Amino acid sequence: MSAASKHLAREAAKRRRDAAHAALAASAPALIARHFLSAVPLPPECSIAGYAAIGSEADPAELLRQLDAAGHVCSLPAVETRQAPLVFRRWRPGERLVPGDHGTRAPAPGAPLCRPGILLVPLLAFDGAGRRLGYGGGYYDRTLAALRASGSAVLAVGVAFSAQEAQDLPEDDFDQRLDWIVTEKEARRFGAAPGR
Image (cartoon, rainbow, N blue to C red):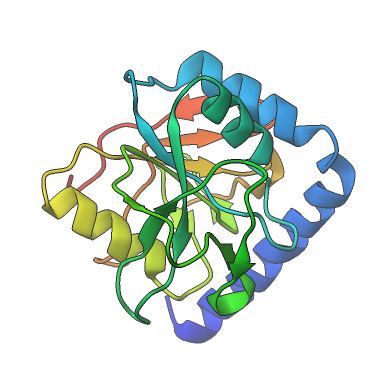
């Protein structure tokens, strides 16, 4: 797919996500938490990396609050080096966040580093094979590739509104597929992806 086609696909996906957010922002976080906790396997003391939602992203804040209350270590991503994998810093709900790259918010630079076993992933669109359309920066693809190449058992769980599902998203060689998608309607596991 050409860069121009991907740009148009991202614009269309962003419009769908904006509309879903306008309709579901108040109710979706609790539903996403419920579906995740009832379906996604959580090993004891598993470390979970979330994200601080920006714009119309599906918000995992309620899920992170419940995971923290259950004793799981939670972290949020930070960009330390551009064009490199993300790092994850320990964070508990209610702790201060600082401005990060690309409009994100991250834990303070002195927060301890974590290695997640589950990575919650924001997105513009997903499809039935676990493909994900992101923002084009490649941060999550690089991060998942590095974690998987190191032998770490990591689950990539997309967090989205059900309206963000698309058909047959384009896939480049470097793209990393999702293991799960969790929306306000369900938690769905995908099959083994190529290159896993």
